Amino acid sequence: MFSLIEKWQRGGLTKKQFCAQHNVALHSFYYWFKLYRRQNDLIPVLPSNRFVEIQSTPPVPIDAVIEILLTSGHRIIFNQPVSASFIKEVIS
Image (cartoon, rainbow, N blue to C red; front, side, top):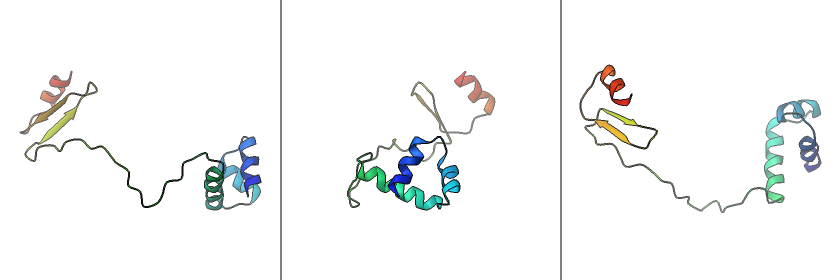
């Protein structure tokens, strides 16, 4: 199976095209590719019981109606309904 993975890597076909050409189920190919990458240290293998820390943003106040996050990183929170034209003026 690894020889097929290496053959695919040398060729110019997509995984789907390669599998169709070699009569291999696509899900089998993905499984073989995962094993191949692990064996060749192309991806780290983490214990399955390990937790990964994630970062989250602070929650929006419960009474907020609209929150706009600008590309500059600034946040605008409207605590009452506003018209679309007003929001357009604020962000332009």
